[in-house]
Length: 159
Image: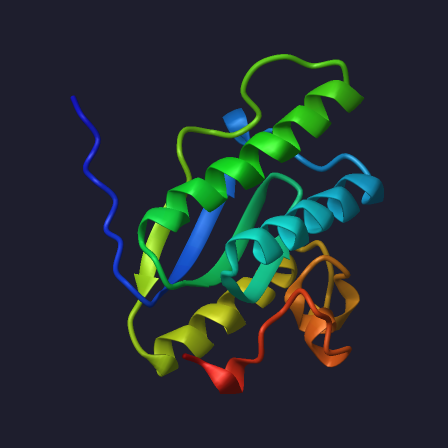
């Protein structure tokens, strides 16, 4: 049975989720998380997408992105997932798929839903009992936002 085509719109915001194959961890140590953020930063500059939120969980990733050109969404995610897979497989002497199926994307419709989505994503580590507070989790955009990190775009300048 063929997959449904992905819904993409010009100048849209997306909640992206990509999971480890068979729910396996995709990050084994802090260096892996730092590498993913470096790859994310590289492709953010190259493809000029906006990043409003992220949360790197042990076996999956959440991103909130703004994309101007619809065809770029799949290209960006292909580059992110492939680059990180090559790094991971080389480092841990693995072969094959790291990610489960294709990434999921949902169009974020409206500013209110955008803010709710960001809150949901940044609260993910607390719901998963990885930390007791959002502030304790170092791999989400919550703390990066406080430092005006270049990887994040300003929520108050949505285009």
